[in-house]
Length: 586
Image (cartoon, rainbow, N blue to C red; front, side):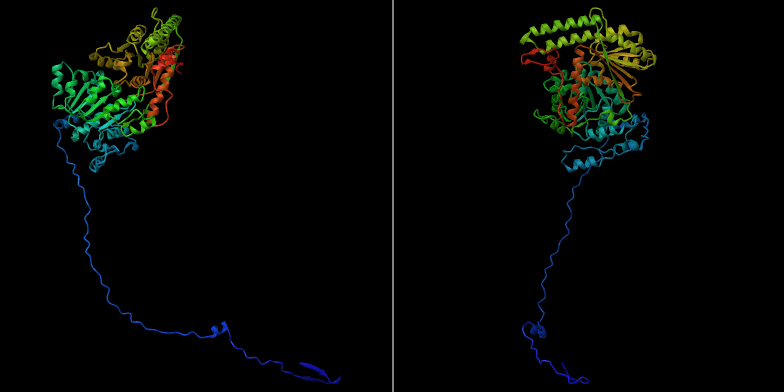
């Protein structure tokens, strides 16, 4: 548009069309955008031949079933009088603590392969139910750990019950034997024990299994031969001393036993001993060992017992950890502080005494002269020579041989004054009968009795009865050999070790005559040690020997020492040996 002025008063307007006529034509990809889609429709015949199918009948397969029949065996002849025998036993009261009311089932070995054997033990009723329903009457209700011990022994063909002294190994073994006999699992059984314990086993069988007939092997050769061949007696009890005398009868292949039980099985720890060889030669199906000390001096002790249980199972190359793992399924070991939380404690005190002047003079002279003589022997010196000197010095620590003075007696008299005044009783242990006889002369006013190897076996039960029931008898003098096993003296609260035994396990057995089930209070153990003498050095080795037992059964570690070895005995006096000089035992 353009504006032109013609004069001041008028404005002329002219319009011009500036539009350019343009025609647009779609090209390139825009053509495709404007092009409508084309559809092509085709028809297909979807009819086809019918699919052919084949029907295969599948039969329902029945699962494979193994049937096991465990018949109820007829009762043995002795069971006919069971009800009459058990009627005299009062039914024990169940434990008041609900925690103790549990179901204890059989504990079969882990190496059982046959399914039938596993089912047989799995299907057995809990042991507690046998008492609750009256099938098995007992004078007292067992502790839970005792049921566990029975469940451990019953299914095993090779087993060691190694409970600490005082936990009732005898009762557990008798109950397991009782169950096996009533179930028909065994029919002929042999129990071997030390001679002093034969009467104890007889008494315990009459208490816990009064219906079982017993035969005590004793008497002359003709009588024993007749007793060995008695078929109607399922249980025979013999002592270790008879093994050698009656070896031909016991090892006769025609008289095979279903079960052989060794009490105090440490008796066969030496594999080369005659006792061990005869025990291993007895024909048998099952082998059990009872011992509170399966390891007394070295792991070789355990090897010796296992040669009876499972010959060749252990080998000398095993380390302590491997040994502990290998025997784990064969051994059941419990301590009092583990299973009896309410058990009264043991209170230990070491009574260190100074020798009297006369004892000191005699001791120093004997040790000095003895060491000189041993040193002069040179290569002819043997451990027996050193051992004789040690015994001589220990005896001097008890009594001066010239004057009979004794620092230990002076100390023990003061303790007994208090014990007797309170109405309590005490046991005094010594290695030597001679020391006990001298001691009695000094303390007889306290009311003493004796129990040692010089007391005839037939009189020993009367000695125990007197000590237990006579209010005027407060002290019993015992030798370690005669009194350390098989006695129940839980009414006694004081134990004195007048001198120390070579092996701590034997000392523990002696102490546990008093510290056991039924103890009414704490048990005070006094261990006498003469200062600056051989007793101090021996005490150090004894403490080290305790480590060995714990090491094996904890499956770990290694002990500093393995016992009172020959080198350690020489080392007590810093002596030369054919192998060279040894340091003093630490």
